Image (cartoon, rainbow, N blue to C red):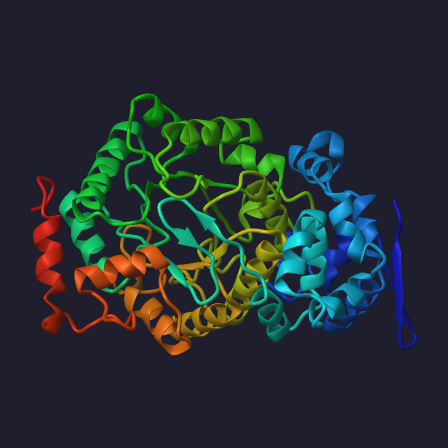
Length: 467
């Protein structure tokens, strides 16, 4: 196993493996400390970055962080790597790659063509050499367009997942929260419910109410109940109205096993969803969620830092051509991302790494109540992601998810980002909002007391499920 060396002043630093080098070069975060892989000092972190900057990018093609023979995610990364797409940057070091990404030569189309030639470890490595403004500057160049019942990812578009969770899966409460979000212009990425009771009968019940509401209001969006993929397969067999297949994924085979999934199951689920032909303008049918710390929490990180393992999860997602993928950046807790600074940094890292790999990356801008973070931190990250060109953000009523017990963004918060940065919903959804009187001719959400939109939507959306 090769070692990596650098000298700072009179001190020589040695890193015993590529994984150790990447871990020591990572910005400080509590999860890496918990795992015992973080740099022991700021000086060691700087030394690791010097050594990483001088490392040829092609090293990642010959030095697997997790052995090929024992990990199917590694096999996926190696077997699907596009060597021809990699050639434009094959001669660069990690540091030179960072400089090139920030140059005018790295345009959006160039980066899109490069994506199949990049591995997760390459993009994780280069992100460790970037300041926050670098992460934003590179990410905003990249647009990844996808479609199902509407189209997402275009320049000038910031979509949103409308998350109307309820502590006891009360249908009237879910419908009310959904209407609340629609009236704030939310829901173009997906109307997606996390079930409080996760089983096939309850998921079918929730899917039916979302489908009923979508059809009654003729909403050009997609719905999803975020149940386990095996439940979704059974629901498809029963003829349920499945638009998107959801699954949490991670960056190692062992961590995915902890989620009860593997690549074969995901392949089966994607094929089953495609067979339904429910998309009207596209065939992106998968929805994935990830998060720094998930592999460590399952003791399945193989001694790697959490950001590098997170990037490996994006290789899994990329293989299945998703409509949606988002990191739930602060959801796992302060054991992994301790405070607002760490959450903000992680959100920007995850976003740029996903987009460099060719994904329509979104972020759940969130934190748990025992983290050293608050809503001001979330405002900052949401606005930075808007500048960086995030595909979508997640909104819940009042920013407080009372079922999952964590804090996210409110519908108003996402609307504020759109307004401040001149961003719009998905074009098909924007036209629907205007047709319903929710927005004006310039795409601005109107005052409900003047528009009459509330009365129209509530009247049209009332169903047998409502209280």
